[in-house]
Length: 314
Image 1: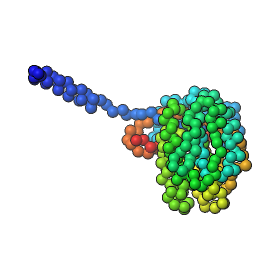
Image 2: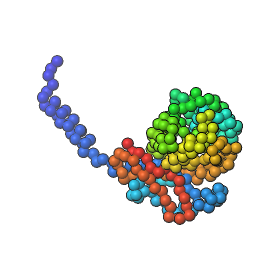
Image 3: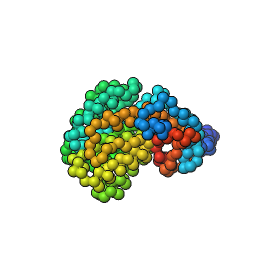
Image 4: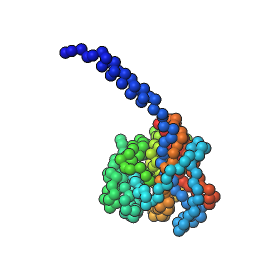
């Protein structure tokens, strides 16, 4: 085979060098888009737990680490269908099975176009019994009774939750939520109040939910371990659930230390929150990796906005 002409080799190398130089010389992006779920209410609505016909939000202001950012869009319920995952801890007491009908009715009443997933947090890993589907009847029918057995207790309910939040990668960006039915107790790092409310798995699940724009709505329900009325465990579990809900822009629901008689009052309050949920997209000027605190406020002092408290940018 003839040797390649040296002139051609030089030209090829010069072209490659120019291409590499051109790529490295490209300006790095100075902004990026961030999408988070927010819920907008008037303080009167929250006090009376009843929706008003009209809420004047005025101008919204988004800040990251106290620096104001530019809002690109705010998509409403009709513009951004909801993707919602129902996550049930499998070792809840069997009294939870009396609430299944209410949960199914809630799912069937969701707006058309809503995507629903049903999963159980149990030993080993999360069990998905129905992947995201727009068939609400199919999703509702896939809910089964809980085992009520401590042998199926997850290592941590937040470990399973972390796995399931990854499933939102398969649905379009927009309004996202998880309904978590759990006692909130993670014994993986000890049995003290501090170890339960500040567990590693809880923090990881919270950060992942914030990063993916998933609001966690938690419902306290006792398990075979927490039903004995141990006040420390109950307070710790409820505190952990309230923490992850607050950090992700959701809400925690519980009544005393036991199981609720009915979830219907909670679902009425939840519907108010979901119907007032928006998908907010803004430009972030922060390009370094790390955790960023988020604030969303209105110029109207009578308005309250629920939103994720921050997110981790990698």
